Image 1: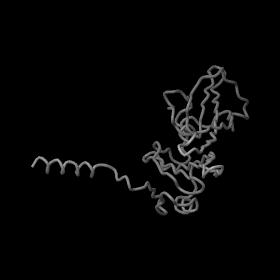
Image 2 (image 1 turned 120 degrees about the vertical axis):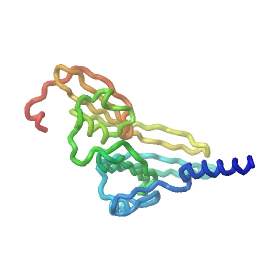
Image 3 (image 1 turned 180 degrees about the horizontal axis):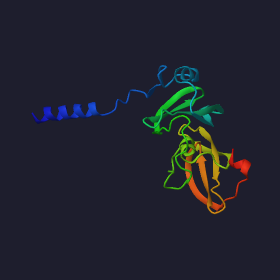
Image 4 (image 1 turned 30 degrees about the vertical axis):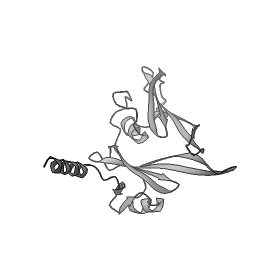
Length: 208
């Protein structure tokens, strides 16, 4: 009797767990997309994303003695904003095919004005996406972009090189306040720091 009860408990737990074999999908209203779909499928069913970011990877695989294969992979992240009542959805494409679909933070709505422009740790969080930051703080006064390269040795003797896009966004909060400098790595916020005092903007710059 005890063994039977144990089996029933085991099956009940299985029913509560997510189905590992089911891949992520997204219903945009124009149709359902899932892993393996093409960029064209996503555009046809979901339309253009609200924001788009990309970086490159280089994969060198050892095929045998003296033989290697080099593959270049373009990784894109498309973010769809469904408004403040729903989570945004982030679609990752690798060389034009859907590789992952995940949920982000709650959306903001198209054309929504930034809620705040303080850009402090109380408003922002490490891990926020660029679209999250833009919705909270507005557009930065200045953007600087560069690329870094990282290498990872694989178990089969191959090497994966990842090219990370690093962006620094500077927010000018005026001559009586310190600037805020935000660092993103592949579109994710990784650092928030304070710079020197800001600057008084000319009238034509304020209108931009």
